[in-house]
Image 1: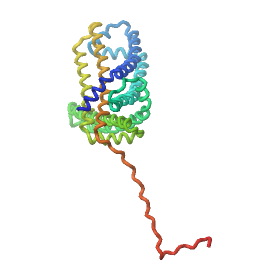
Image 2: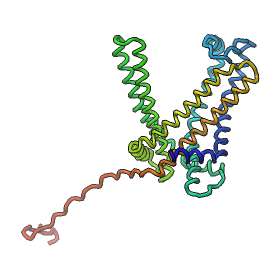
Image 3: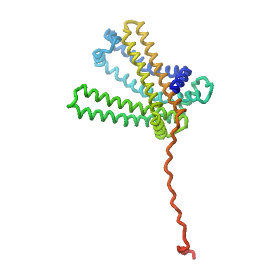
Image 4: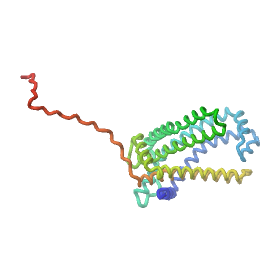
Length: 319
């Protein structure tokens, strides 16, 4: 828990970093939200039905609107998907700068103030490696986690005549939990592989992922245990938000403004949680025994046979 509290203190001391990431996230959200708002404002035709959505989601209103305005909304949905890919890329891109910031806390007793230039330079330096690492991590998530989904589907189909709908639900839930645990486990390894790449200047994504995997497996409680704890904290944030959302009925501008503040607070907390998670992985990596790379087997030289006096030397063709 010392690594968790240390990383939290260092995260709180990097307020400028948190605000920078929050502003970038907010700008990406506005790029998608403003066109949606303008389109909805034109397409609602002054209907009061959308006001009912403030107090809860109504699928009937949504389906009627999509049936009438799908042609206009479809391009905006495509833009949202592309923005989602941009957000994933930026999260990979910023990881190098975030880890460089935590490196300052370790290397310097009194770290320098946060520098946007240094952050951008570090992010650019490591982005190529982290993109390759993301591909490796995604491959393991798809293979390892997808195996549980396929197995759960096959078992559910095979036992469809034996179990009721409730029984099939529990079977699906069990295999979904196994999928989630497996996927988050590989994502945890990916975070430690990023730290390893930064600390040891590793360029090979597969090798870094393998070494990080051995580190996590040898210290599951200290690595994946704290990683899962941070996931639970993030889930708790969403739970609190939904409780507040149910308690506050958005019946006027004051309550709408209040919920906007709550939503933005949740987004800022998610940004801080991401930075805290990488900082925790960095702090834990400093105190755990480092896994050494597996050296490739060296070829064994063939023994040299010495000639004996009894052996005849073949005559030279020059004689």
